[in-house]
Image (cartoon, rainbow, N blue to C red):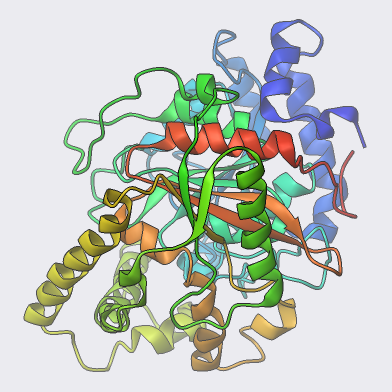
Length: 475
């Protein structure tokens, strides 16, 4: 559709600085791409055309991404007065608008990014597919009858298809990395404490960031938005130098483990091949690679943690929705999946059970971290245990909630642990299945070591560049 669709965010920003294109031209080109392709892709929850044009009038030309178009995920970070549905039918029906601009949204603005729309997410981000019943499915641009993943599926599909070069995403159990893996793009989950949380957020697992097309975009964006706000519960020391300077820097010889087994999941041969092949490539780059991973990942008590925390988190979604609607939530306000798993009329979790599970989870996280303390620099795994499933296999209209849960829970097998421990993780599009679908590989570093992730990810990007485009692409 236009040559801008093929450029990553860094290249688009450089074109603006050189005077080759104006910010307004970048934004209008992105709006045209969305208008033309999104009826096929279904990535957009709400257009933000007028908001984007108003943002251009306030743009700081010195910002690192001045005028670069992007999408806000329809969940988490948001702009005051703009549509916000969280994939929910009741919020869509009343045309709900965000009451305030969040910390991360403000940092995106300061970086010069211009939001041209919001990207679809499953209802309250609770599924590993993006098929909100109120808004319709987002389709994978590599094959339209397959899922792009979730919960940041709209963001990943839009970036992969060239609608925008990057898009906001967030991750509480794999919601950045799973869709990145299944759409053939880059998904970084930063360390806990690297990105400021909203003042009302107390969860240890959630982190907001973005999905990008290149490693350098992820590094440059992290430079632009990292840092703490007053009162943050979790903090990390600032990096010793810009993250972008790590892209292309020599990491030195590292000790790297490769893990192809996952608790509670049958690992597809293609997923094993993805991680194994990445390990061999890392060996050719001079690293010491061995089959290894934290034994604690296979502890059975993880299942107990989920049984305690799961119902509480689902019920909190209903409570939050009630506050947004200004009335009690009815069963018809939400999808059967959320209502069934929240089980609002069911037994309550005892306070002592919750506290005991939290303490046990922290002890488990310490045991996982012990593997890195034993001398390993990185861990390589498949991002997801299987290639992207068919949308029909995860359709909430055709399958009962418990069947959907049993189908989707294994998708978190390689991702959720690192939300508990707080490690930084990046999913890279290093593998293609025999039938042409992307499948990502995940790199895990010690807490606070995004610098090392960027060095090794850039090595891999140079050695095995992901140059293929999906059949649905704007360029």
